[in-house]
Image 1 (cartoon, rainbow, N blue to C red):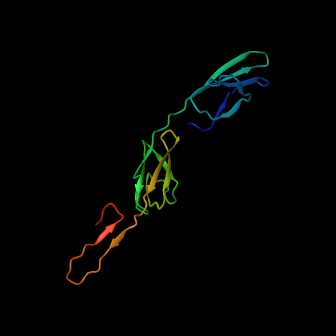
Image 2 (image 1 turned 135 degrees about the vertical axis):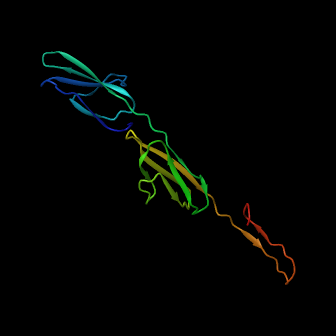
Image 3 (image 1 turned 180 degrees about the horizontal axis):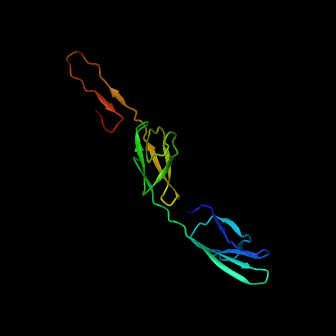
Length: 173
């Protein structure tokens, strides 16, 4: 998985041999390790080549191919706008996911959660895909401002008609 450490090693190296590891993605072909084993954090698929020179001067070369898995596409489904403290269900969507985590307390290992945002918020979900790689998605919710309502009620006598006027919202019930 991208960003994950891996151990790379060569075995059966004769005592007093010289070991050099190089990476296929290094344009300068520099030695990245002179140990029989090292830890790499590859950012792309590549080949690590080990060259072992034994005490007699014999040279042995061997490639170690490292293939990175592509990231499983994920996204969060849910409303992007809500009124203050309105319930919003968010669902992390992707294939064959497990071990869900959200940046919200009380949401252990759930693909869907309900949030009640009071202010604008960004929700982050992570999960593990079938290859063991961690995937992440973010979802923003804009909390709409509460309208300021004004109601004009005229003074009327019993039995008279009156017009009550309300302003400050888009719709009324």
